[in-house]
Amino acid sequence: MSVAQPKENQYAGSLLLKQLVIAWLERRGVTLEDIARLVYEVQQKYIRDLTMAACRESVERVLEKREVQNAILTGIAIDELAEKGQLAEPLATMLRNDDGLYGIDEVMALSIVNIYGSIGFTNFGYLDKVKPGIIGVVNSKKNEKVNTFLDDLVAAIAAAASSRLAHRDRDGLLK
Image (tube, rainbow, N blue to C red; front, side):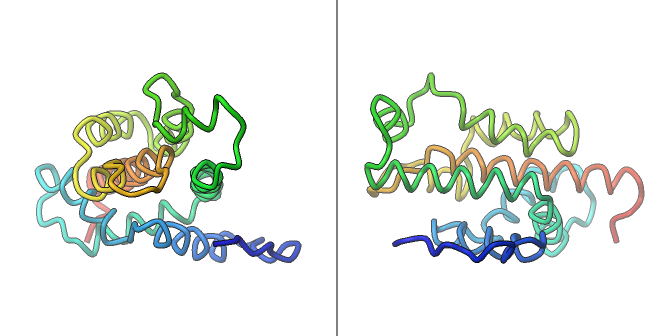
């Protein structure tokens, strides 16, 4: 699938970019509901009366951040270039194999996690290690897709959304 080249400033607003990011995630097999389920799994023990609606709203708020949008678009684009064989060696092989010593995917994900403070790092570490839900599916390598960046980006979005909820709960802002 070729990526259409946008007109200059077509995606200037972060809400337009958010819609593009959601479309790119869905194209790679990840829905907002998938990510919201991860958030629920992480936070249900800590937030009384947590709802899936609150989890989804938190995911949506995270996706409104320009830094998050840029990281997701960049990571997915790199995964797709690796899939198409359009990257030079040895990078192409490292990405196709999700080489354990290639840490740039985690570094990019941590740029998302950092937005909501240190609790995000704990959440990310758990999700990256356990790989629950859609993270495990994306990471499974059962198809020909390269998702070296995507699994970490999804974990980072869920970790950031979880952290956002924890902060809002502590501040009495959850309904």
